[in-house]
Image 1 (cartoon, one colour):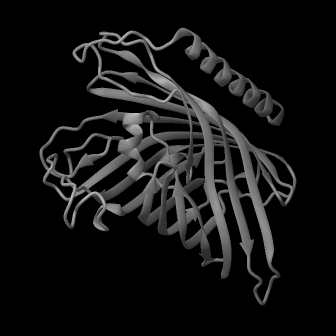
Image 2: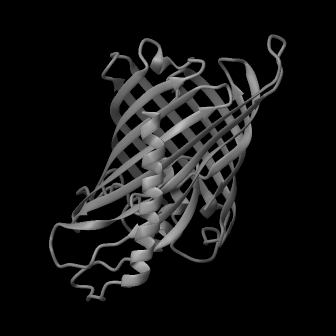
Image 3: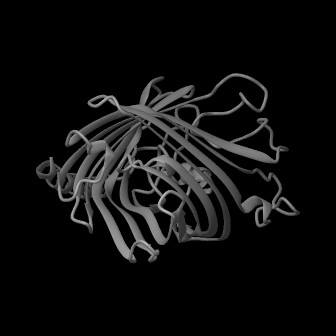
Length: 343
């Protein structure tokens, strides 16, 4: 599998470069009226910094990015307390990715291709664990090199986005694994006129559907398939307890809630303390179809985005995660406080 990941990574990088060259040569498609197609503004090329791919929008566009970015978690650096190992660590985690957007030629067709975003990424997880009475201090680093592609189909009423990513993870302990993850992210509007029903999945929306509300939220359900393979090095991962391969399948749902301020001034203005708050929660449940083991993971977070600018935003974060680690399947219970940065 490892022999496949690196060539695939190189091919996708080459494809990204070739697409950029094609767009530069071919130019943008001709404009159409608003009645023919919804206007979309996209960067041809860009980069992003997030906590993980759960904080990456289905479509990476100017219009969507500005709507989604306040609801997304940035890379984090802070202090982590592990309740099971009774240890305290300095930690840093996040994913940085470059991407190219390929938008379709506008069409009046009811069901249409909505565009593609693709590119390479590097995911990092750094840990420096302080010494305890029973163990010395130690440093652990996990770097994942990979590539991703996401695309969508749909119309005004419903859209279906798909994301495929694969990478090879190398740990400072010598462990090497690789994974391929496929995600289906449905997007559609649900009927109703009350807070619990009046929302668009995967789209930020005020709680009551009107501009005078003080709360908005983003609900993100998806179906995830994860194929993991152990290559070499010390094996301390629960997902590889009896086999060198795992195939996990299951749903995930995320919820992000933040104040919604219709006015530009006052206590609920765009620069007020209230407008910079964010609460998020994610729950993931999966079953390994090869071993029959079941895994679950829940992560909650509270963020105050103190500073915002052209390069992104800097904030303070407090989070708690418990259950089975998404990477290893090992049981964990961790609280973290620190800084968050996103672009």
